[in-house]
Figure 1 (tube, one colour):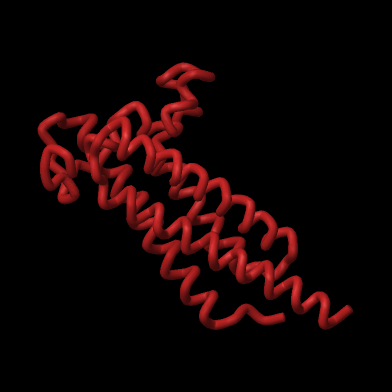
Figure 2 (cartoon, rainbow, N blue to C red):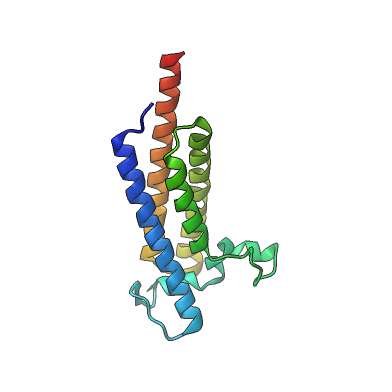
Length: 163
């Protein structure tokens, strides 16, 4: 079985875009922490501010890890670091044609979509903010889930034809 050209192109685009946004989010967070007057390109107003979101308690470990470990623990990483890991794994494992890789891609995509829904609710109902970078990563996560579900379905279809 060969990887469909559309899937490779879509996956590379989504993962590279997700990586870019995650690295940018990390840059904004670190810049804001070292300089409280730092203004990011994505800070367009009082209620449209990505740096406000990235530096909130929900910007690290989804706002949940701090309840399990200390707030300054190495385990309580910025969400952007988790994004960097996620998009790197999605791109790398997306090159594999193994069934286990396909299952992991789908599982990790469901986890990312659940995290996106959770963070979107925090964004809208708790922070009352709109973060263009955040919302764009949510869209990327949904698109990766769709791509991974299509892949798994195609692999199962190939298995049935071969069997």
